[in-house]
Image 1 (cartoon, one colour):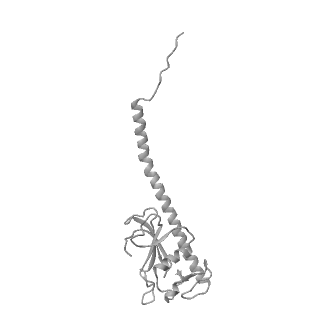
Image 2: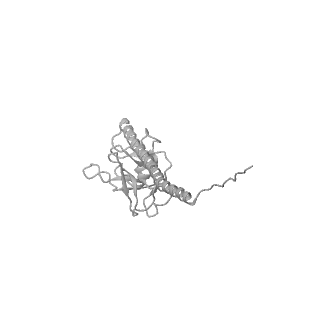
Image 3: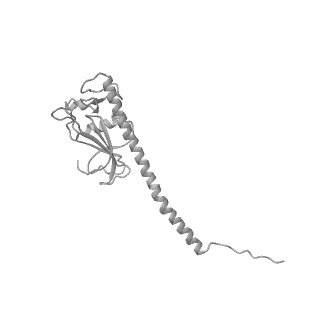
Length: 200
């Protein structure tokens, strides 16, 4: 009887090198695509939230019109919890804005913060723009431009707005982030990309 001796077959060095090269190529191609998917998810999420903000502004203004109000309205009862004050043109301005005695004509940083939480029901952590805002765990940096909502001729000031920069995807100072600009005198919203500085 003849016994065949079984050969132990293994991978040759060349085969192992080829497999390693193929895995390396797959990794080089797949990792950037995975990173782009994460960025796309952040982008779509924040754009949806910014869209909800815009819808809330429109609903609030419709409520103001339907209530027959004319000018500044304190604690407009027909929207949300009934605690959001309006600008004198009937768009949401913030909570307890009357404490400044401005009758819906002045914008503050506090207004921008209370407005966000008054219009939206979400879990995002807002922080006022400062040198310490750009830290992991902070989602949105907010503040405002110009304090007077109307000029001397009682026309809306095109430079008075709240801004909300989404930094959760990249909290690096000087990075380009998605920004919502909201103009309380006209109800206009703009979604752009913006780079924030660290001064307030």
